[in-house]
Length: 128
Image 1 (tube, rainbow, N blue to C red):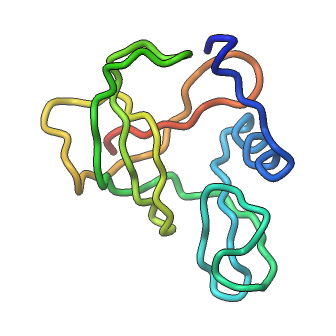
Image 2: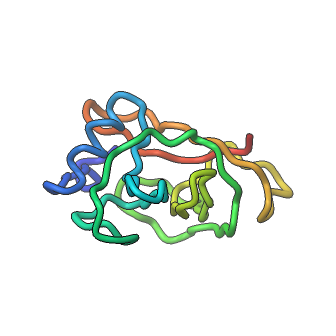
């Protein structure tokens, strides 16, 4: 990962990125309803109750995908990105890896971690 693409966690996202260094994709969960939210927020979007943190299963379903052809700091173009609906409910925007011809919405996906410099790793998804 280039110097320009380094992750700079906020107070709210610090726990998420700390989990990422250990290979855990952490979701905030409403303790009362069990509903999960992603990205890390300082508030519960489902109510006023407390939030706890739980690791995601790593599975999901592809909702949409596109090819990025514009150079982006830290990434060689072209690359594929998509929206994956996690088994726990939230939708996540991420890079798609190891994509074969014919990948389409509805395909089962699994979480993978991109190797990189020391510190937080970037998450991605690949066909399951």
